[in-house]
Length: 239
Image (cartoon, rainbow, N blue to C red; front, side, top):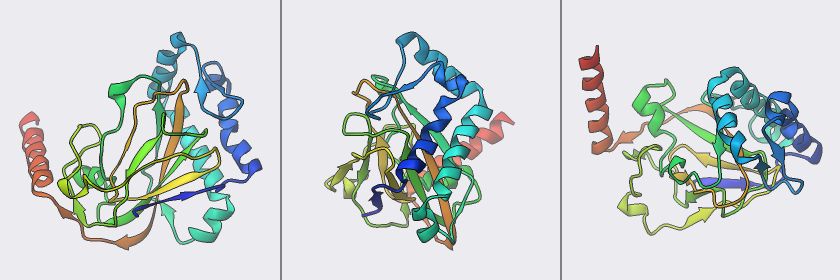
């Protein structure tokens, strides 16, 4: 399918440790985790302050990501299934605020960014482990296209609202609904996107990416190749 949902990847104690990072005073002043683990709340005046804090304080941002990575690698699931995998260093913190319709991540394949930016991992097959710090449902989650692995990399970009390629437009789309302590695995060629947060809760999650250094030859689409060439020319002109 190009993805997998792992229920209870974290035990109850591991889950408590995972979300303990939000007890830090820098975050506690802005965020409160709902008692039913449905997501985080804050008053309207503090949302901008929270987003500005996480954008400006890279150390805090990295601390949250590294905390999640450390918690994940201590789980039984990781030890039993991913002992020959290692993080490729491309990990990220994601904040999804209610009603910010135009700040969603559009349809994309994770492999597109390394190819377009020459990150050094563009010839490796890797997996993204999407770990939310709360439960999520159809109103504040992500959507994934049910599709087999493909070597074809299309020109879709996570910041550009481009329709799915025609061959996938009639494919089943899975709207992720999981509990705190669950996670989703997405291979690097699978199309996915975030959805408009129509809930009352802020969704906070991390993307952790791992590879076993399996080499893969990807085939760039014509439109992606053209965009890469145009960006090269643009950068040369600017220099």
